[in-house]
Image (tube, rainbow, N blue to C red; front, side):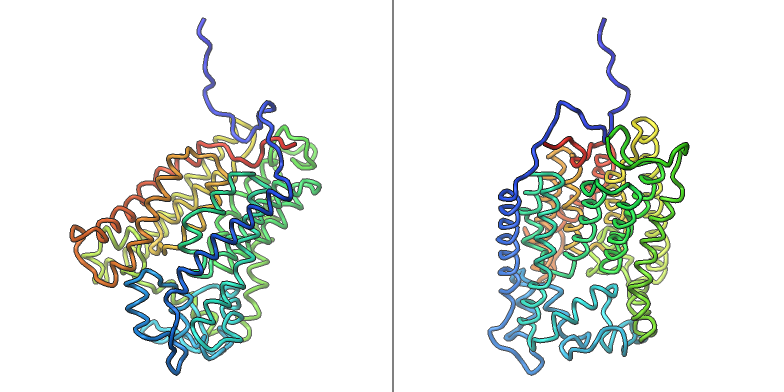
Length: 453
């Protein structure tokens, strides 16, 4: 008689026959060294746009804007040296606001408060955009190294995807994303490796980290809901860990609510001082993002798919409604699939669901900045999707990352030249792959729950 195949994969239940060895200290140090070299290459790439001369505002000369686009060394860090009072060392949010035309002034930046604080610190002791880029890189590099260390502890040599990944060269110092990636990765590490603590306590501290990540770049806040559902259903079943459900309970409602409350409380505590010190300036950063229109700078499918309508007020209003609704729908779908998997296998796959939710966000949000790939890269390490998905996405992202700014320097039709065609391959290749990865992540095992020796 032919053996009957199982009807569903066993998610997150480790196979005792598959035992992986922990990385030694020397191996982890090597991962960090490789990450440092990759980030150094990334800094060198961006630093091509600095100097050799500077004007009275500390802006690189000659022809900074032209060089940054033409030579593909543009970074938001260097670009925003002028225009947000960063060069004047103004403390963020307290004295500024937003004008009727949507421009920010008085130290307000369009990022959450912890990123704003990091920006201020990077500018504090420098007087040129080159110095600002260098100081910002020094402030953020430890977060990139920490991510490498934590991913090595979680998923061993798969962490090479982070350490040697092309996105780290392209985007490590493009914007201020590494601290947010660090917070998200640290939260996973606390849940899955700090196992001397009970699940509730691990999840509490992980949600604090996710709240801090939200105060850096918003997206880590997406993962609070999957983590709460993981705690609600008792965490990983069948593992000899000091976790699980309270005695006699099917669900840990109190633990799940504590996860949400810890994240929300962290966001409140971080934001409250800025809101009290300068409510108008603090609110302006949120107003800027809510009022942001779909245009070339947003680089999303909404622009590239409907750019002929981009100048119409009705289109902008429709996207402002459709984009968040579709994102919320994708989040709900991911959580529902996760719940079905939990009913089959006993464990809610919070990492897989988080990865799928991030894919929904990246695909459907009206803004898809190039450096957002850094958000996705750790999930390629943490979740075992097929290598074809990973290679395909990295190639599409590379095509987009190398072509977007040279194309902006000399925009042409999509059929006019290799640069324009590479950009379209990158934009639509990423979009199709994100839709596929949404499904692939939900059907994959994670790499952090395998038995270790």
